View 1 (cartoon, one colour):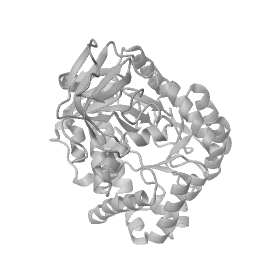
View 2 (cartoon, one colour; view 1 turned 45 degrees about the vertical axis):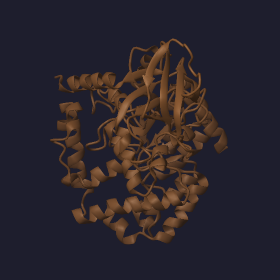
View 3 (spheres, helix red, strand yellow; view 1 turned 60 degrees about the vertical axis):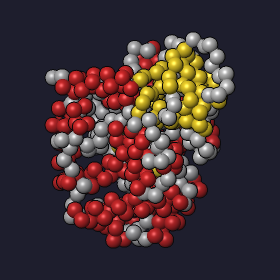
View 4 (spheres, helix red, strand yellow; view 1 turned 90 degrees about the vertical axis):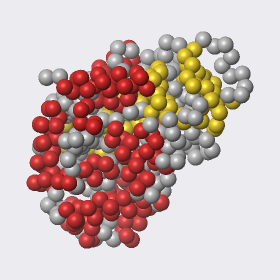
Length: 468
């Protein structure tokens, strides 16, 4: 049954993102470039890559006759490195009215940072679908999108773009309605009542649609995995399930200090083995976790990226999040929270070694001081800090999203016939994962954006952020 659900998701994704960008107006040839094989194979040096009609048409030796006299845009790739387009697998682009100007700010920041695909984990469905249509028509520049629409939460949702769920019947109706409206998957939040969670899981199986998200507070991580939840976000449920206090955590408050003091590595290993067996993906949003837990140590007033952020984000929404986190969540002392942030990296490494697959996601922009596009590169660095190799970190934003979406035949690697979503780098990310930030050009479905084009895009975002 799970295979049927995943196949249905792949078909939905093909319809949603397979045509999510207009065809390139002309061919593109990248000469003498180093092509990185994110499956783990050796880098292919001195290759010529030809892009035509939004697809990779040919890859050959630069010493050969690949390309010939083809009329095309020529790009000198000498000394540069080509990787697949990056995916941010946890974003919120239209989060009620909390982050206005997403169209002018968030979308171009993704492209300027080499993020050519996103998984929107809660937003205004019809608005996002309209954006996707405009991207398809070529009137809007943006990434491919996989969209959940509004999140399912408890009887009194905490966030915009949410549907209140009080009963199992509410849950089933919400799944049916979102499927009918064209949502690609279902996103769960934390406050859904226990019986409603299992009703939602059952209804998604019947409807052939995937569900992902938070492990709701009312259920165990093991139960959510066994019920078919395809991905967990923010490591929710992981520390609970690795503690002898798991039953108590289902009923009452929980803090990082409690997680640290009661973490049981044997319980963790048992849970991790189950998640690996069930192939339950993890999107830990490590930059957001660090930012939230250490929010009282963070000051981005002088951050160069702040110029791309509208005042309303900084002065209203981020302030709201900061106050809520400070008063309601960060009840442990700073030293304890610092230890917890480091423990999260240790646990992610343990899960990785247990065979659990990972996705890179940032929770942008609701994550406090998370910058669209930019923070995905930080997320890759956090994976390396957790013990991933640069190749394994790169896979969390390239190959792994394609696998998760059932689109390995179209996305995730650089091969003939695949969609031409590519990032040209000035330095090798396998030497230093920070080199993913050294972007020379971005290709989105065959459409070429030079460094100069990307700089103009960033200037436009800066102007939009300043507008009243």
